[in-house]
Length: 276
Image (cartoon, rainbow, N blue to C red; front, side, top):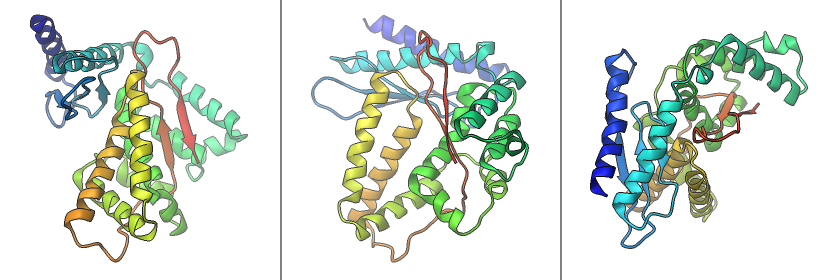
């Protein structure tokens, strides 16, 4: 029913306006943005982007566009509310547990965790720098590092001997913006020139990952940003002169990948995935 849809959309928007009124740092305001995937027949798909940048999508078979918006709003509202729970905050206990798990996974030692020149030490630094923030807030910050790893920029800067500290200092406080997206798209244009078909293969893989994550009710920004960057690269190939050199970002080695948050009813705990 239309009234049910309007109530759900209103509740989600009101939630974020309430957060802003209570002092939440929402640099781009409290507006919740909906995006329908163009289609002339069901199933219809809708994405919703929250003020902080987190993205969710319709996670059910939706026979109408209204139902797709309702499904997206529903999962976004559940995650927004659940994200306020104290267990979703980065605390000293959470940091110690996460660092210990990272050390165990990579057979590291405690000295590594205390050294910011190591991957695990840099990871600890990122967690401590974001103490008090929620999981969604931390995830929004980590998305840029996920994209830089995916795009190959971190590997390129490792070869240029750029330090982790330089990357952290520069990008920990920089939002993902159109300049970063444009430069990544140009990198993919260059790859397509070197290896014809690379772009279409990556796009097909990304669309599969996006659909799987959406239907599982996961946070989608990393997958959605990848798709948008690849689509931008296709546009550049069709309308712009092909660059003769790859434009690499001034980034470095650290890669911190954060698995998307699950719906509030999931019994699984959140997992941080690290690529060092």
